[in-house]
Amino acid sequence: MKYDIVIGLEIHVALLTESKFLCSCATAFGAPPNTQCCPVCLGLPGALPLVNEQAVEYAVRAGLALNCEINHFSRFDRKNYFYPDLPKAYQITQDVFPICTNGYLEYYIDDVLRRTTITRLHLEEEAGKLVHSSGSIVDSEYSLVDYNRAGIPLIEIVTAPDITSPRQARLFLEQLRLLMLYMGVSDTKMEEGSLRCDANISLKPAGSTVLGTKVEIKNLNSFRALERALEYEAARQSRVLEQGGEIKQESRTWDERSGRTLSMRSKGDAPDYRIFPEPDLPPLRLEPDWVFRIRETLPERPLERLHRLEESYGLSRYESTFLVNYADFCQVFLELAEEGEDNTDLANLLMGDYARLAREQGHLEPQRLAGLLQILQEGLITHNQGKAVLEELFKSPLSAREIVKEKGWEVLKDPAQLKGVVQQVLTANSELVERYRGGEEKLWGFFVGQVMRTVQGKADPQMVNELLKGELTQKS
Amino acid sequence: MIDRQDVMRMARLARLELSEEEIELYQRDLNSFLVSGRKLQQVDVSKVEGTSHAVAVIGELRPDVVGESLPQEAVLGAGPQVFNGFFKVPRIVEGQE
Ligand SMILES: [Zn+2]
Image (cartoon, rainbow over the protein chains, first blue to last red):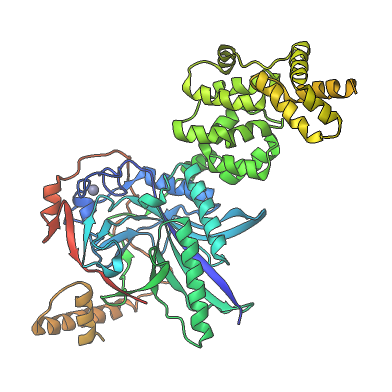
């Protein structure tokens, strides 16, 4: 039987605040363990939490970017459970009244614009960090806990189950990550855990409207892990169903090493969170004016930028996508590009040799790069020499024009001078000239090569070709 | 009615160890709460908005400024087992196919 895949995602995004969500402990990554904790984030008796205004603003910004409704009334709830990464034995979250609801995210799949519904977005606090003795939660004898991360503000974003393939899930998540980065609400580093994704996946007979039993996959800490885990899980569920088995509703963890999902059998009871309104925090009320100001100052979204690069700067989808994905390159591009013109040359320069050098050594002053483009356009140097000048720009403080002058790299522009070189080469190889004229046309390349070598590459190849043509046909 | 099993389950969720006498005591107490609750249910609240907080305070927000944290020794002092600046906890889950 053929099955349709149904996927929904839950994404946790750590917000870029300086201090934690409900206390003033620092959020900086990499501090010694358990040095950024206080009575509030450890849940010591008598401590009173206060909501970080910046966290609320970031959540609203993210919600607006995701086309959500911003709820002027939202409420915090207490979710009770025992787990070693939770020092208070409860998590402050938003259950019944989240801050944002009912939005969507648009993204491309092979040039087709797709839309995934965002069911809700809510604020909550991060848990501590567990380090497992054997590297994996499933077979560790003991775990170590660091509560520096406990209490960092998070937003949890929940999608509707309308993603239909593992690849689509990855493309969605890539676009979401980029959006959060553009909004400046998170550094979205999956390797540091500031962007995490859990996936729910079920299968149903092709075309059926009845959903199958879903399985939750955790521990997906890269785009690749998300796609691979979903592929593995879809195949596993399909195999179970083919053999007449039943899918058990459960949580599974992705095991990178074996490339499999493994069932997580909890030692305790089935979860019973006994959620109730958080007594230590009053409800959150947002002033419409305040929300309006955030909406007015919302940064450009990646998809808007993509379309702008295509429409106003004459770039292809491929070039635009590169620039949208690498905002630092895009900044250089936008500084140098001419709106309303074709900026393909600039984009290609940035994507090619410049990208390699800039990634190793950091970006150039855009104006120095502009100088290189200028002399290329003037024909002062050949395209090949442009690469050498670019290398020099990263090493030397001189401008592109000064480098060319200092190295003596100007193209021989005087046809008379170049003609002399061409004639010299042909005279020196008179035997080969005879053979060429006798029909050995492949010798053409040899003559071009000899001329270029004589002028150390500083000739316009087109001019060399024309002069050679003149000389070789003239006297026959 | 709250039975003995309910009390034991609630105690387990809250990590409370109850003696036989305490189980009976709390079962009796919790059932008397339910009796009071049933009385309240007779009140007509169809025109009253739901309340989650005793006082109607507007949420006061805090500016995003870093303050002092506790020293590491003080933080770790609350844990029964520590290792290299971390709290140490026993095995959490068991994996299977
Ligand atoms: Zn704290």
